[in-house]
Length: 343
Image 1: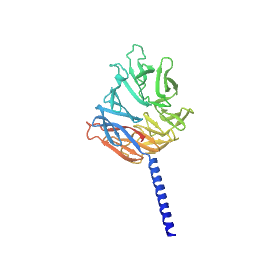
Image 2 (image 1 turned 30 degrees about the horizontal axis):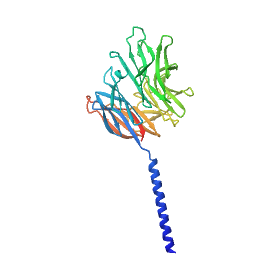
Image 3 (image 1 turned 90 degrees about the vertical axis):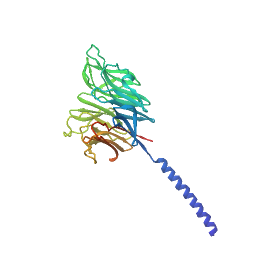
C-alpha cells in the first residue's frame, strides 16, 4: 500500500508545483510598469529625463524644454530660447528642428508658438505671427500639421497668447479668443477650422477627454469653469475667492474614468481640484507651484516648483521621486512637463 501512496503523493506534488509556476508566470505577465518622462533644462541645456535618467537634447544650449509627448516609442519635445521674444524648437527622438524654418514663418516676423500636439505620428503646432500686412488684420493665428499651415483667424491685435490644442479621434480642438471685422472679439474653440463661440470667457485653457465626453476649461467671471462639449453643460470648478486673477490652468483626465482634475498654474498654490473638490498637496508646501500633472491608471504624477531656492520636484502619488535645484542665478535647472506611458 505504501508503494502505491508514495507515487501518488509525488504526482500531486508535481501537479501543484506546475500549477504554482503557471500562476506565478501569469501574475508576472499582468504586472504593469510605467515609463516616466520629464522635460525641462539642466545646466542651461534643454533636457529630458526618462525614469530619472538625464538626456541632454541636441543643440539644446541655452534652451528650455517646455512640453513632452511620447507616442509609439517616439519622443516629441517643444522648446524655446530665453528672453522676451524667444525662438522655438522641436525635437523628435532628439533630432532638432528650428520651428521658424520648419513652419515657414518669415525671417523677420515676430511670432509665438503656443502649443503642440501629436496624433499618430503627425505633429501639430498652433501659434501666430506678424505678417506686416498693411491691412489692420495683420496677425495670423494658425495651425500647422506637419509644417503645412492653415489660417484660423486674423486680427489687428495679439490676442491668442493662451490658446491650446488637443486632439481627440483624429480631430483637432483649439481654444481661442478671436477677432474679426464682422463679429468683433469672440471667445470659444475651434473643432477643425469651425469656430464655436462661448461668450464671457476671459482666459481659455485646454481640453481633456474622460468617460463623460470632451471637457473644455476656461476662466469666466474670475473663476475656472469647464464645459462638457458632448452635453454642453457648463460646470463651475470652485467659487473660492482666495484665488485671484485666475488665468493659466490645465484640465486632465483618463478616457476610461469619470474623474476630472484641474490645476491653476502659478495661482492656486499647492492645490488642485479633483471632481471640483479642492485638494491640498500633502507634502513639501514650500514647493507651492504645481507646474504640471498627469494621470494614468489612477496614479497621479506631479511636478512642483519652489521659488527660493529655485527648485523642482517630481512626485508619484505624493511620493518624491526626482528633484533638481539651481545652485546659482546663472544656472537654469528645472522640470516643466511630465508624460507617462505604460511599457
